[in-house]
Length: 114
Length: 111
Image (tube, rainbow over all chains, first blue to last red; front, side, top):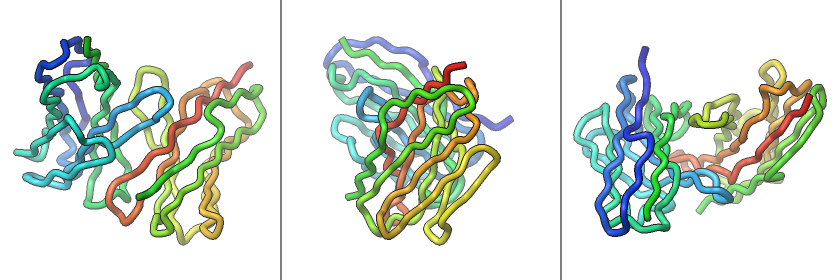
């Protein structure tokens, strides 16, 4: 069955370190998204991509970067981790351009920055 | 940019009662409004959506209503069951780009 996976599921890191969170989907979806979920803030969009080599900033993109070299993967990199980036991160994918289609979410990565 | 406000932040009901969650949006260009359900430890999952050319949509025990003039939309769950307990998110889609989510509502259904 097609799916979307995230790794690692849990990560503890130190302030200032570079961290990369992986997201892999097997639906062959063009669209991929990264969100962070924090208590009291809901889901906030970090970056999104509508296809290979396409990336766009979301609401809270400062301190994060993504690259899309193939259809299946959209890794999220924290260039220099900060305590404010402690959060649960969700990756999602959807079928076609624009936001009108169902987004399929991964299981999430819980990141703690000490 | 688009701003989606969701109320209430928590909602407790007895099994069998109805639950209503309301959202307002700011961008009049938004024309797609999905609702996602997130169970504990999992990613959100789409449960129902509505487009701006429709005023109401139903799927078994859940329904969504949309008032474009007032810029608000609501999720209605009837005959609630314990398995309806979850966090619910509404979202708006400004300009067909990317979803903007509300802050979520934690629904607790007690038996």
